[in-house]
Length: 209
Image (cartoon, rainbow, N blue to C red; front, side, top):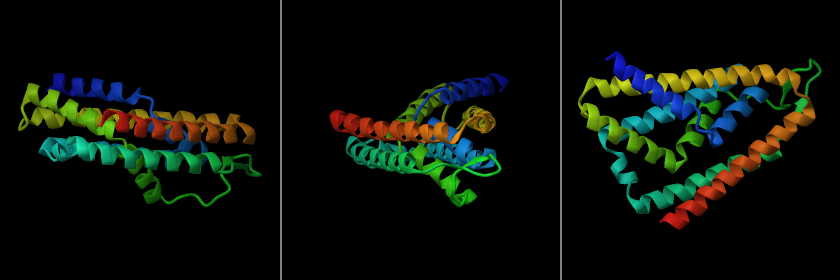
């Protein structure tokens, strides 16, 4: 059982180093909104991963695995990423009088941040395909009804969440060394990355399907 858990942790460490739109959005949220806000965003991400794994486990993603459905989901996912990117790029950053680098806007509620992390992560159809593939490999080794599958993905999700918390902590510590110009630059870079990721996703889906 320990061997199974360690394999799950290894997969989690692999996933945490996959640099995608969610990675940059997590760092940006932690820098601009604070450590706790970053954690709420990370909670949304890990819940979305759990959702995809659970759906894979019960076979519901067989519907999503259909090429026609993948095309629709890919287009919608790309549009969502582009929308997030534009909103991020145009967001203004103000350094408050207490020198705490914050956006001069009302801080989002925890549920809002959780939902943002959830939908930004789940909007990528290629992430769905990743979890489908992972479930196929793991289930072939342990069997779909085996408790080892649950133990494996428990290790994976805990590792993903743990490393996301670490990212939030580091990003939040870095912000005290950043001025308004740099923070605005980060907004622009993250926004461009999200827009490009969304466009690439749309083009890849159109080209593939």
